[in-house]
Length: 421
Image 1 (cartoon, rainbow, N blue to C red):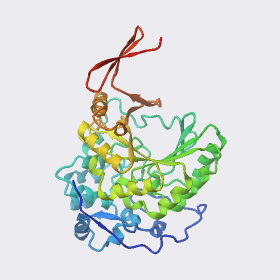
Image 2: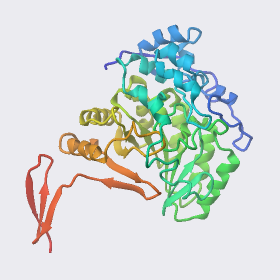
Image 3: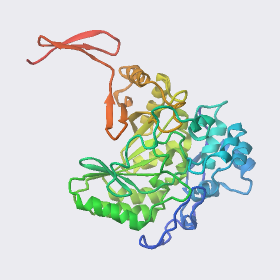
Image 4: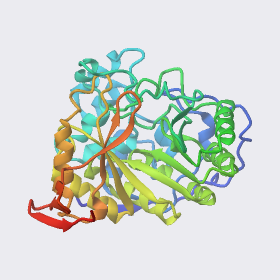
């Protein structure tokens, strides 16, 4: 869908305001709430937005301005969390399920921005199912377990998962700006009593990394790290960058997709101080590549941050070759390298999202040779029980014998390569 766009030209006076010391106590962000200190965060000047946003604001947020809309703090404080809000805006009966979700179940939350995106998509769009609860997620099927990747078993501290020899996963927050219904960490993300971890908990994780010199790569995840205010994120990055053996820092996020106005000039100026810094962005469907999300990705790329995409293969949402081709080609245009297609993890209530593994192989086979190599990601299963990511490929090698390798190309034609014996 081609979008008309407009540009906001207003700047919050607090963009460069002084903020609290990172060692000062910071209140937890509880799902459904938001800390007052985020009021000091800036909006994005000159941030483009789809023309339909003005009508959406006038209809559903009549007291708000474009200045408010482009303030990521306003977006979080005004997030949609109840069945009434959802029904009023999107008119979907699935909203009735929200009020009856079990106490420890993954809650519902989407930003006004993402609601506006859903409202401008045609009909009953597949993206609704990625964020809106349905009764199917309350049904536990055989083989589904709470922590399928056994991250708890590989935890070195409460926040550090150390599975691979030279890299760790640092779970710095349990808060997201929107909750994907197929989240592999739904057992720990956004519980009502949790949110951003404390600086003290971070320091324990940083100390572990500093003491283990084989760790050269740190993936910051959660939750979503980009929901942290700039000063807390910089505290974390500066501490990690000060460790001599940490070569690479990565951030996993969906913020450019569900809260693109978070990518402020002040954020990108800060991030570029801590290179080499990379970012994995979670996309599910080509229609997420809105005017706003494209701008967010371009801002990050302009800051010198290599961007890769992570996409979970989802039944009835993106499980077609043409859907992935459109998504991956669109990602390359905004300098995001399609990196992973994940087989959906067997968390409780995920059967309606999961496809046969053969579907992922079919998609890779349908991409290879039919689009740019850069647009062909790795298809992986994160092995249940903590086995790590295992890549899967169609069988292009037909035989290796008598000094020859028999190969099948993307068209199904057979070729022979002279092997070294």
